[in-house]
Image (cartoon, rainbow, N blue to C red; front, side, top):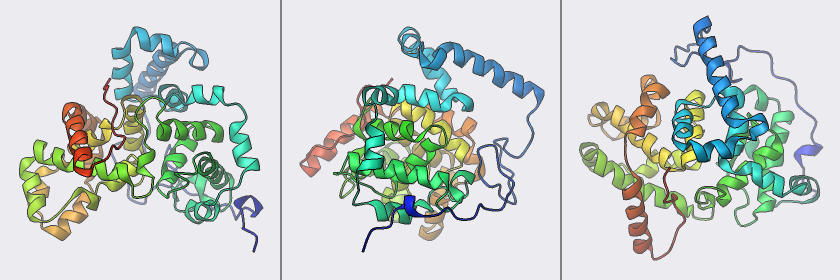
Length: 356
């Protein structure tokens, strides 16, 4: 029987129009979140945002022409501004610049086209099956076999051909989907390559290889960091037999893009692409630290629920991220990596050792 490809399918009906937030997600009935999605912006806020955009445009230059020069001259300014959040209108371009994906694209002309059009993948049916589960409440991905789902299919299929050892794993859809909201298919593909193959930071492909070896290492490291930074909570987790695999795996596999509020995920991704995977550890620890008093009182079942459903105030980027930045993990992360490798008798790619 011939395999059915998404390109052979007719687009389904366009979903009926619904109220959307400023990122394109269908608004929830009751949304009182503090991120400003459901309220109008004041003139002062618009002016402040315009000033910020002008600063960023000056910093990156036309099409990113001044970026590398500015980063070399003023790395601390770049780091500070990225931590405050990249302007949404420039986010796609800046992500490509800080990830190294723009250079990969320029060095590999027409490769993406070749992968999409002329190659076949053993993962095609798996990709088609999972596509509707990726950001189902976003207008771009809602239409069955529509433009968003086709683009997502193309990027994931192209990567599964490009790296047949990794192929396709479900969590990759959230990475590719997030990128497609800010850039073209080809740009999203090369950013995915930059992340998994390690254009700037250590390769992430171990998150998706058979056995998820890098996920296992990260959970080992995170478990020890919880015990170090939050000993009372670590002891409570031990008593209730809670381990990070029960709540934190998706944090690493999707870099918080799976179930976290989108405005928070974007701010985390800004820092993640510039500073590396440490921010995932820091944000995870900051979440637990913010909620530590409540978490230490809960029994097993309520604890599991709480760890998968953090309160709204804990998800405010302007509260959570400064707390995350204050947590130092670099030295201990490297020590824990070496301990894990010694314990398991093998070398696993992990967080890069040069923190910016």
